[in-house]
Length: 382
Image (tube, one colour):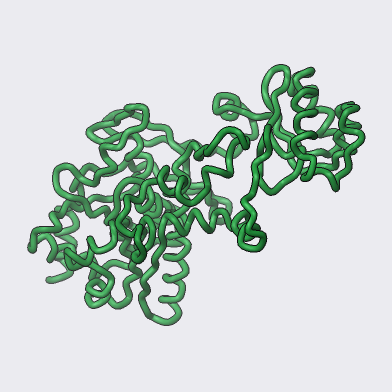
């Protein structure tokens, strides 16, 4: 067994859906013991959140992918006896995570002040949708809604497309990752100074930070960044930056010298443009490229561009990507086994001392470890 960095750290996860559980998943991958605190029988709501109607047992495939390698303690947080058991867990825990709306944990007596009184060394980490103050604090913290309200949907696609959201739950996953950063920082401080901490983050703040280069430009110019009319790749970058159709697929062109590009692909229409015009004449340059590149297949253009040292890549779908040696070399897939079924999912992307972090434990059943944890607490009390 590998000596993982967070071995010996116990995390209580009062979380549902994606943001909080994704943080718990990363901590578990790094060696922490993560215990989901769930309502009896039905468990947390994410168990019923399926993608493409894919299920493993009574829980969705999505739930298993984001809750592997955890334990489950079933507790009715409206029941004083169950609250007393949870308080015993808090007394011995290192980290508590929740992503409930503001006021929920306070209502049941498990807010930061109450938890810190039980365990002053506790790292108490919470995710909200829009923060705990302001007129939006009670609004639902859902990924698409956050992408829309923060302007992120106006950074993807072409100018005439209207708003285009990301095709993944970027707010949830990014926010969970940033929460882990805060937790680990607080654990380091606790190791040095012996004090706990309240770590707070919101989905909205995560997406605002995600757009720091775009927002910094807006703060200082008060001009809304504009997507290019076609082949858009980044609102602040000039041509040729974007994705273009070829004779048999698509090619991505990153930043490069306009003159070198024109010469390399033998595009006479580009030869009159300079790098100084790459942004101001972005739409004209991209239109010329969009008309020129379909004349040849992707491999033809890639050979020419890469020989010249210009940054270009083919645009893959998942079938092409997973068949490529570059993908296989990463060994990103790992199996889980639940209810006699094999589930293939991604592994933790972090490596420690050259070792990949793998875990094959599936997500727990609701309350699967309740009795075991109660026995552990009783042993401590003896």
